[in-house]
Amino acid sequence: MKETPATQEAFEDYYGLGPERSVRKLADHYKQEVAAGNAVPTKRLRTIGKWSSEFNWPQRIIDRVTEDAAGVRDQMQERLIGVSKRLAGFIEVELTRLLQRLADSEGEILAASVADVEKLAKLYYQIAGQPLAERSELAVEGNVELLIREVLSGSNGRNPTD
Image (cartoon, rainbow, N blue to C red; front, side):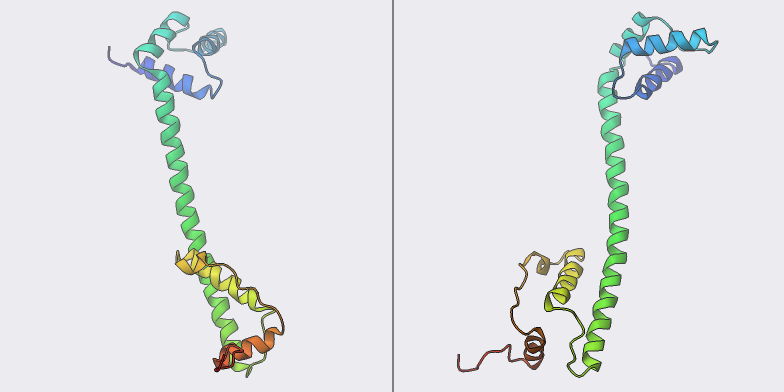
């Protein structure tokens, strides 16, 4: 049997009933519509049941929900990519500014901690999908300013004879 505009309309109405839909609820809805003077594809429960069976409405509902969910996922992915690009740009600008200020300050420490710089760098690489983001955080104890000076000078606080 070929699907008609009436059966298509009935399916859309069935779908529109939401997660608690049933053939009986659609028939009740159509009876209310007829009582209000509105046209409906049918008001007979048996006809709605036949259409549901012949045109596989339960599977069509599953297919439609799956399709809708895929569309939502695609939209969210596009939004996530846009936000990630903007966030990566912001972090890149902030890191560049921080590094430039550090270079201009002749060693004066501007960040509150090495961990702050590390977190920004790791976030940047994570957004860019780079493996650096997978590494664990560096735990730093002691004088942060001294450590940064040592890192910048290349000694890392180690005696070359160690």
